[in-house]
Image (cartoon, rainbow, N blue to C red; front, side, top):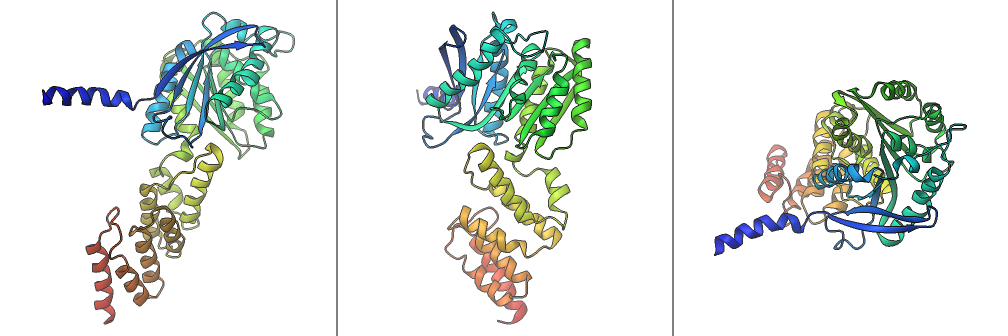
Length: 382
């Protein structure tokens, strides 16, 4: 009986902590009809009552919602992206009308104009009123709807920060319009563009032309990523592009990577503490998340300081450690290393000794800290 109960718990527990998917029908004044949407709320959304979440709005929600929602849940579980609210708009019977643009000026018209206003003025307002949304918003689409999402980018103050273009069926002037909008952007923007070697030829030509323009773009506020997936068709590229888009757009949220460590932190011209501070300030400013600095990121900075011998950086690092991990040995260790390497061995010895009674963390425990103090005492005869 106990064994059966244990098996049941092991099977059910993951389901209890999984992300929630809700289904809603929204009445739209702009469209004069109702629309079905799917909403995935993050794990533990109900428990984290003070937390707000970025929003990813997914067009073609009939088939794009599930792969997007699954990837967001997976990446956020491993802290490679923030937890987010994913919203899919079902369009199986209306996508051509929804994304309609006029042939004269290639701008949304008729039902397309109404759908444009429905998303921006009604759906997002509904989400903001009902759920704990943050200001950071991303929109995604595929072929015809991927062209449509970029019309928001052309507005003076775009309501979306990120644009995931999955093999877009671009309107004739859209490449120039996107490039001009991003060139002039005075706020941070993210644009992801994907095609495949086996994509629809007429779409692929327009996508490659757009990439040529965006690759030459010079605006530090714009993060742009392009992928051309080998042997990927118009439909199979979606499964590869969604995780690639999330990795590109939320790179600042991820733990410090080997690339950042090798190319930035090991450069003596870069302050590793400033890098760490800027990283977490960006997470707060962009996503509205007051995130505690990861222990792994502290260790990456510690290793970089030891490699570059920028001992002064230990002072700022100890201050951050005291703030983020109070009561532990982390801040004490960094402070002691600072004193030890800047010509104050007696103060370093006493600082190591101060760790007695503090909580152990990472590789730091009482034996290690007291051994460091004893080594200094022996070397200098204190």
